[in-house]
Image (cartoon, rainbow over all chains, first blue to last red):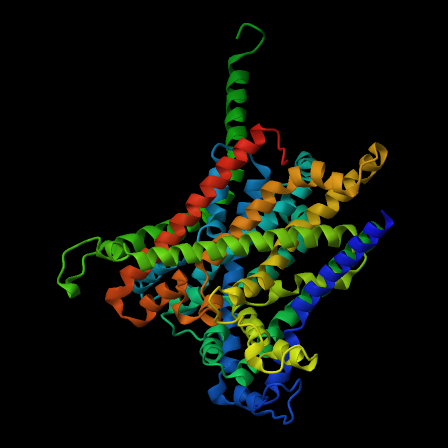
Length: 272
Length: 308
């Protein structure tokens, strides 16, 4: 019995270690590749180091700056759309009962469960017909379609946790809907709005196909710049681009944790 | 009106009632923008695509509306459907099972180890394109793992390292998807498992149940719909995603998203109906699988949520 328990423990630890390594190890050679041009098999570390890839990346033809700016603009527009459409929808779904609610909910979540490439191809044709629409906006609309389900689900869940009690108390004290939202619901929602926004931005950053289709391959966000290098196998440059890609994601993650910290500390002080 | 109510009071009550009704339904307006957005762009976009694909093609000189769909009626396309669906199903099931196992272990044994949870959720922030590249450069025959194997003395030339990228079975593709989707499943169910374990710990102790029994009688019956839903999301995503098979599968592998995007972007406007038709097939398959899952779930509810 004891022996079996120990074997089980060892198995569990091996499982966890293997998976941690599976997730973490690929980052090491990636970082190394970005600082070398030649790295023949079977060397574990290259003999010659160079920063040519980084030089290329930061030069005008590298377009890393342009890519980051484009990605940021699209992500910001997408996030705005999510906040405007997602929060009221999540609120209604969490707080009201009505006929056909399940159908409405499943329509809102549909892009999660059904591949959306077909609709984006159709949307591109719409966008050509109204060709005054700027590329940033049409790409952001496609990203909004992809991200809205995640956002609505996250916010919906938090609204369910908050419940309806505080709001009813506020109504009986004479508050209107706006006051309820700003003074009661928004502060309680903030952590999940931050999480939802983080998800939205990360997903928007990583879209390749929707961005390509919606802009006809012309709006160069980071994935669109990277893809040709990745498929041609120029390891050093792809590695450098990948690391550039992590920077905004890392910054966002740190921002998310900091904001969460500040928020919870504020609540803590309030309570005292 | 005989029971003490006068005419005015009745009217007032009616007006109040009306106001109450309007107020009650005012909250429902919040759903409209998002619902309209989805209806116009998701549903409308799909329908528009289908009509586009049905427009007859004067370029070919043929007046057949359904030429794109007829062109798909051949053995090699059916083979591709089988491969794409099988791959997506394999990714969904593998990720689902490993993700559940990892989430259970993290919640039961390693809850204090915050850094371990960060590791298990790290890949969520990494785009699929990057995950494909990351795994390519370690799993290639001349990649980093093969170098490690050489230094451990397991192999003496890179040809003897197993072919995992651009291989016949799509192992590299499945590994890359798992790298992304296992953390997704963990993120989805981990908070619920933690909550369920802490809610039921005392009951389990009083009744003398083991952790395994808690899993069987509490966690699985409550979590199963969400877990299966998560696997459906992974399935649908894998079915339609382009980056990973484009980079990690061999050219003749026959992943439909890759073929469709090639038709769409490289072979000119007149081939676009074909791309739409291919993607439509994928969407229909995902919808069918979803209907099947919902049907099975309803039956499972009727049978009292028993698993085995």
